[in-house]
Figure 1 (cartoon, rainbow, N blue to C red):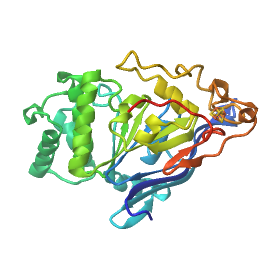
Figure 2: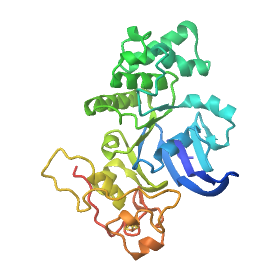
Figure 3: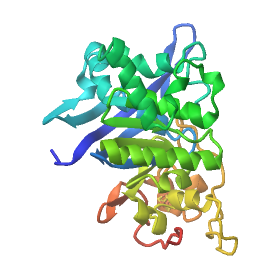
Figure 4: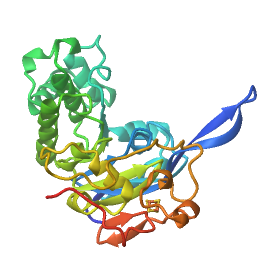
Length: 337
Ligand code: SF4
């Protein structure tokens, strides 16, 4: 087992059956996550990006076993033990969930409007029977202080708070139970840009203080740039590139990553756009993906082989993997430092 690794996902598949007719005959599968392997080291952040429908949220939900996987391993290393979460029963998984929490995209719908801040933040502690009475209240107070919320507002309801404050409540809820892994699913996407920066900074500070490990899911590369140590890019259920953040941003090796980078708004209007000019076309139907490389109908560099053969995921530089037939030849454009 690698010393510093907290989570290793190996060959993860999640296929959703397509059923037809009265007898609900299975006529095909949506391959939402198709043979994805990745690893997150303790105290680090892996950014997971791709367009809506790329499978990244399904992968996050599989990691937490919020949905059952079709195949693969999700190995969690903790206290000198390695546990394959895919093998745990539902009951065992309920017990294990105290090590992992999720922060959701929409702070407006993810908080129950009928519950007070105290009810919401204390929920994981009560469900897991970790604290009660005065100890419970102390844990909630501490969690609120860590996220910069006034403890006097504990008895208020979510509607009394702004979007950023609600997301802080969601983070306090995740934090209250002292998890090791937090899956942030589009955690700042619903917020204004200035509030996004505050929440990202808060997440970074909390990571440093508690040695937290994040799987940070976002559709926008600019959001993951400043929080991620490594970035993985998904396309139609498959991992197409993964690298240390700076390497991926400055020297992408997959045309899809280049296209995602070109879609990032630039503060400097004089900086030229990459020749690919952004991402065009639609994400293919994951129930009926194109032949060969799934990206070929949208790829400006596609050649005949791309329509016929799926490119394997190979190491193109130390710690940098990509699935493109021409990843060594193409001089793809990244962002300047
Ligand atoms: Fe484009 Fe071909 Fe590379 Fe796929 S394999 S990303 S189609 S160049």
